[in-house]
Image 1 (cartoon, rainbow, N blue to C red):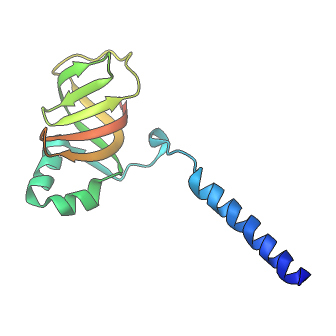
Image 2 (cartoon, rainbow, N blue to C red; image 1 turned 90 degrees about the vertical axis):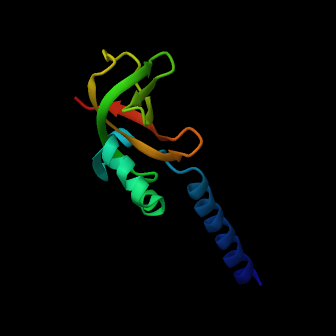
Image 3 (tube, helix red, strand yellow; image 1 turned 30 degrees about the horizontal axis):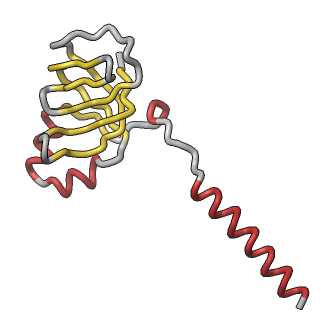
Length: 128
């Protein structure tokens, strides 16, 4: 009986440790991750127009490097609009960026918003 109780106690403790490690995972550091793809906003748009389910499987929640031209900026909210199709949240608002500048960024691709008809990225950092 004591042996079964000891095995059961060990199982409970082991399960608790696994559950704790599953729930409290370390956060992703996008800046240090290796990028999965390097793509322009125009090429990304073409991939989604061809087949959005294949494009979602390819890009969604992946670290990508994307490049294009800044069409609008809201640095107080850390938002950039690239080629009128990609909305990006940048980490550093103290950048010397201007409208119509070419930009290359690394970030996590969140997906495509059908309502606003734009792509979304977050945790973006500018690559120079």
